[in-house]
Image (cartoon, rainbow, N blue to C red; front, side, top):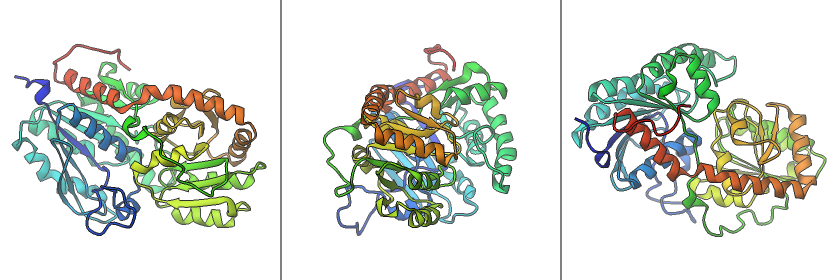
Length: 417
């Protein structure tokens, strides 16, 4: 017999989650609960980390009990509370290689998850990894409950590149993805593009729901002040992981080709850090580039509010959750016309779209926005208006409805994706 929704227990499985809050000696000026930057350097915090953590918080506020099992990354292993009733189990080894072994180390926590209360739903979050989906299938079988999967990055359809690792992920990971998603009780995707691709893979349309990533409205209230004093306007910014997928180096190169005068602020850390620093040092506009490094997610709204334009030059992207945060801050966006980005950024309405990897086109779009303040203002107004569709509390309510439907407690409340 199904348990009432008010007493729901969700087992959440994800290879990445926000790092533990810093403890012990915090740096001067650290915010309460600020995250450990060493963990961010090991695995720079991006959209999936923020998505899984914010969803967990929003569902916790709705009274949903949750057990999260995730990788420890560079932080300590162990169990920490989150909110009123969520518990986060961090496991695995603090090594960059063979990180999928976190799933084996996390298996005991998955098997014991029903001790506090029976598990009603297993929710697996699929990124660029191979371990979460098999672990989710096993967990659903052990706990005899529905399996819900959120596809943050379809390794079969979104991942691009020609290296050995990417080819392995597309081949083996694509097979695991298709096999699991066809059997899942519900599949949540971030964009309609991915929904269409999964239907072509044989995932029943009735089981697919499109629910994008969003922003936490609580972080975008009040006057944050200017956190970039002394940096001349207009300010062009990048906020995110410094990783090949995001191609931040393309932005640095494009900024050096601009005819108009502006400032560039790069916020983030990651494997492309050395490349970005080298390109910035070699740029003809080096004196107008600020490399700010890692910024805790709670500080991102203040950074966005201090910019005039946000750029996301990704070579592939499922959606790009920083785009919704930029819209909430009323920022026009210049982004690559790739993946699910065009479903978020409406060309000429909330921002401008350019071909991925096209340095000249990106420089021209930035020149246009710098030279036309009226265009910036119009796109900013469009972005702020569109952001109303992406508030996390409402999105979390839609995820909760997916849980109820997977458990057979409700009929279809919204059309299939």
